[in-house]
Image 1: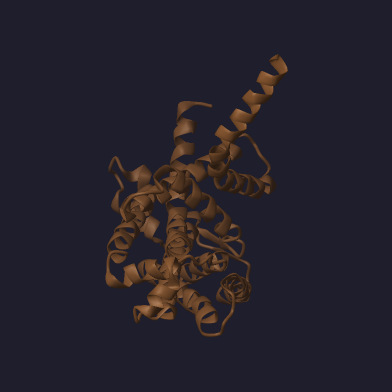
Image 2: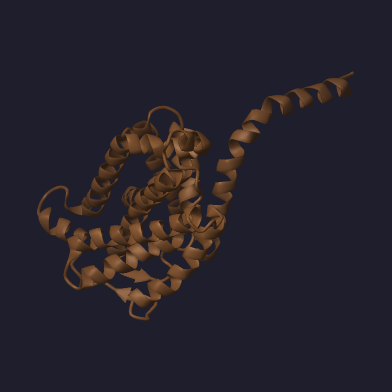
Amino acid sequence: MGLSSVLALGQNALELGLISALTVLALFLSYSMLNVCDLSTDGCFTLGATVGAVVAISGHPYLSLFAAMGAGICSGFITAILQTKLGVDSLLAGIIVNTGLYSINIAVMGNSSLLNMNKTETVFTKCSELLKGTALAPYYKLIVALIAVLIVVLFLSIFLKTKLGLAIHATGNNPDMVRSSSINPAFTTIVGLCVANIFTGLSGCLLAQSQKSVNIDIGTGMVTVALASLLIGGAFLGKGKIPIRAIGVVLGSIVFRLVYAVALRFNMPASMLKLVSSVIVIIAISGPYLKSKYPMFKRALDHKLHKEVQ
């Protein structure tokens, strides 16, 4: 593999990692802060992609970003209402919304499973035109994704320091304490999930515009990818202030995409990539546990060897 191939592979992984990082940051807010496992992520990601694609195809590339974020708010609101007002378990609420979004996404795409955006103006083509003739021209996708991630990280860093942000974090830690403090945990849950799904919808929109196409299965497995990236990021920078942890989450997403890229480079069948995701999740989850058990295992092994020597 030549140097140019390695650099191209790294750039592609970095672009996808940054775009996916928006979904990971959404999970960081809903799962790590709010303590809600939102299984509607796959459907919301696809919803952002389809809504953004349809608006971009109609000739509004910048408006497509806001439309995708608005679609994410709607998805998060419905998921939160099912949990907080209708008494549906959070896991079940996510599954229900994710299932319903499949039909909605098909309808948004005009009862088609594929939208082609080859001749559509997107935020990426706009950036490409802006950078044409400069040294940064080959990195237009990377620049757009990086700007989006920086804005979201900055927003989270500020938002989670506000009273509402602190209330959302407190709701995840101890909802009873929040309730005794005259704060409505249902309200903080609704706001938290709506904000989180804004990032997911934006992530889907950017990936669709980057690929210049939308498939109905574009969001399949995103919750697994995001969870794996979140756990990997936690291993890097899992402690400290919110900005540091958010940067760790982004790094986790990039590392995950690099592993994916290497797997593809070794001609691994596409059907096996979901298995790779599952294995990465298992390693990320069980790694800290196995590490904590290692000293005990080592002592037991040393004791056994010592007895055999005697």
